[in-house]
Image (tube, rainbow over all chains, first blue to last red):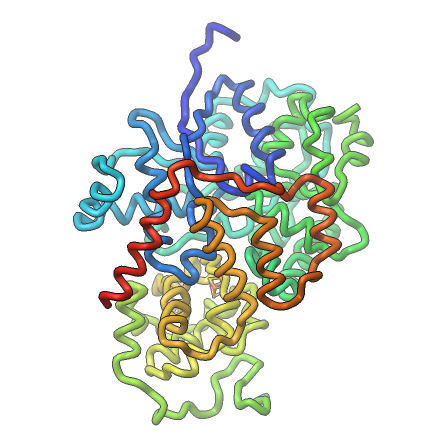
Length: 285
Length: 200
Ligand code: SF4
Ligand code: SF4
């Protein structure tokens, strides 16, 4: 479709997609290309701070995300792949918007004026727009009736100052439905995966993960799909159930529904091998 | 059921809070640091009902707020709850008073560190330190090094060894870090903090 104009976004992949979840990053690019969306990776981006920095170090936590805002060229929305990075970036932008002293400090630090109008979005906002436009109807071969439990984790919960931001609960199910999958109703779609407790108190995180995985088994899900790369990893590494339900990144299912994914090496990187399922469903060769 | 250390593990506050242990000014300090007015909390316990990790905490989230309201500084700063809270905001979403619990927990943790309080969950603290060090060093997180250094810090070099191997095998852990090019940008954010805390 060479006549179609590309929609351009500045793109913030974040540490997970850059390293442990490369398959998330690549499938996201693949999907976007198919929809004529150009992702321009933010040049020299830095970590948004993740949960550890704001846990123990107030100042770097406050200012780390602002450097990324300053790197974003004007005139293009900034899109974050990970819901948590999005929250850090957006929160930093809101604080700067409200506070003149902080804007002065921003200028001193990064040598440029703060852009109060910079639009910051998550990948899910883009998905929502595409869903509105009926973009998924064209996805062939679709997901062939696969039974999927959509997992949002704490992407749905935000600090009170962000209460009025858009929320995308139900969006994954809606998209899955138009991709020909069978999205399931289940009780654990918003239960937190444990974030850093998966590393520092695995006993606690494992209990949470066990509930989530058992919840998926209960509704006979063939797989779980997550909105966040860290959730995906935590569900995989801390699952102790013998059944081992595969866990996908949402972007992987989007690519699979376009018939892309086999031979890309994405699924080899999963700790719970999804390939037997995908072969059985004839989604990969 | 009050256990031998006097803390109640089943969710109610200890029968009695020693008000002699209160410190006036603590409430104000935490309000200032967190930007939250904890006195707005009316102890409805909705937060604790929804918190996915409340059962692993020594004080439930609403109890932590109560300790802050009453100024029971030591109990609040040395509780495990402030470390186990992951800041997922599940509680704040349901709180009728829009208390930003994660911000209160952040403020308590940071106060516990600056005031040298007893740290109830040293492993969690060590892990955060390694993540922050990694960001300080590279501008991004380098997971393999974080795992190795964290294991060394808690003198358990072989913890999660099999998991680490599987992740390496699956190429989920890169040997070399992904780095920011203009590192002075990052370093100045960490220096800034030191300068500020010396001044304060
Ligand atoms: S939900 Fe809000 S008002 Fe209710 S106890 Fe918790 S913090 Fe207080
Ligand atoms: S933010 Fe903390 S206290 Fe609130 S629900 Fe999450 S873990 Fe529990």
